[in-house]
Length: 266
Ligand code: NI
Image (cartoon, rainbow, N blue to C red):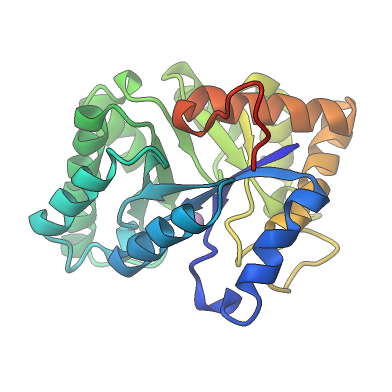
């Protein structure tokens, strides 16, 4: 079964068919899903979804594009909720200089990224990191706080193989999604080919970033087989091997999302 490590089913693009879609995932080979919070409201909706669906787990955190009105009270709330059995990670957190060019606002992003990394350390949970056009600052900040002591994934990886290796050396996983199927995604295809399979996680970031042949449409976990197929093609291994290895990786990184051997993911 596929382990979907990064989805946003709280997004309003799923309002019309969320329940039917989520109920159909298991029949399409999707075993587990991590729904990832991006702002405070998304975190609350994520919690509700974890209560509704046995196979769905939650990550709580504030995305760099949404930190402008983040408060210590909100972090306190997140910190409390991390004790719930189905909250498996802190995320998504990080730096996004693509959408934020203002240097003062970028400094605010770094402050809250650091603060949420420390929250992960305190709670013992792994992190889901978003980093866009901020490779060097992300790496520098993480090295500065000894982030190699905090397990995590660099989600929707968009940098070079060299940068991937720097994070692999810190023990991090690399999240790969629909972009790997794009014809012009040379860098990511190289990363997906060269890094150890034991460090790759499958993800959609849905509703965004649909893979070929559904590029441009709303994404969902149902498209993950296309991502697995492309990784398998690049590495010249079977699709089953990619699906099994990446699911095992996700259960290793997110131990709270690992079901007991004798129970189904439901
Ligand atoms: Ni995301």
